[in-house]
Length: 144
Image 1 (cartoon, one colour):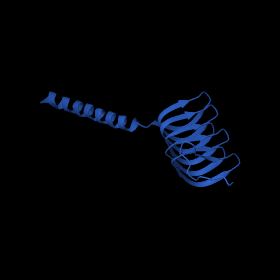
Image 2: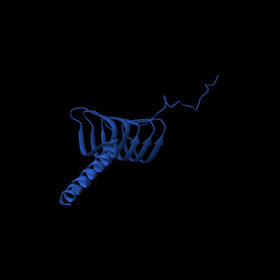
Image 3: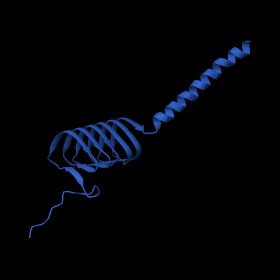
Image 4: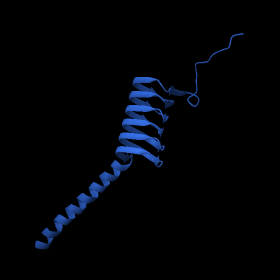
């Protein structure tokens, strides 16, 4: 009796893996989670979780929902949800995140930006501009 194989794998069960000793170049787009223990060069876009193991190396641009890293990331890392950097991790580049947890020993070389920060900067710039306009008007009003 032959065993029936199904090609339908639920997103909860399906984890895409690049194992240690494997080197991949290109672009990955996935709705499921990804784990990298080897090395990857290129763009990664996943609507789920990205895990970079201690031996993992990612070079390029990453867009994901959540990310846990024990390895090396070179490039741009954009995480909509939680970015968790373990003690052995290193990020060299630009980070944009929703929330971030960093263990002692993790290394970040580059810039970190909270995802909501651009809105705060715009509001801050508008507030500064209104203060400047008010300050400019005050001396004119006093001289009249």
